[in-house]
Image 1 (spheres, rainbow, N blue to C red):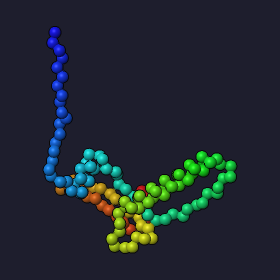
Image 2: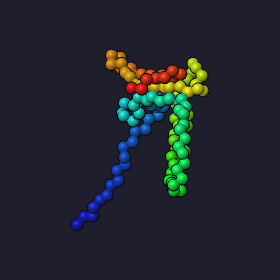
Image 3: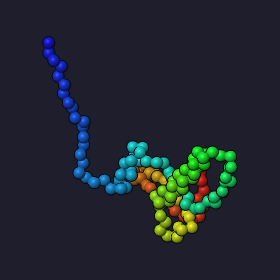
Image 4: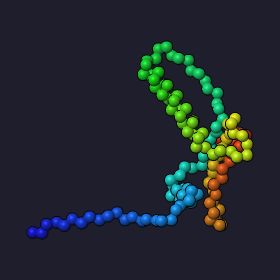
Length: 124
């Protein structure tokens, strides 16, 4: 009787020494479905409505409300830091931004269209 033989097979790996640029990496990610669809957001400050403190709420409920406020503020801060920055106008008072991706079927070129404006962009 023969003993079973075990062979270890390594995973196939492809090593590339060529560096992929930012736009090329973004295009590859979009091609294989790893990027987000068209984006639209605003950095304008919306008026905050203060909710009255409910005297009958428990300590856990108050803590969860405070945590949700902090998470929302952190999300807004991250979105503002990672958003495109306007070059032709002062964006301190807030601005709207929209990013679209398109391609030309005839030439095969892909386009990233980025709009930053101090006017209101329609939401569609």
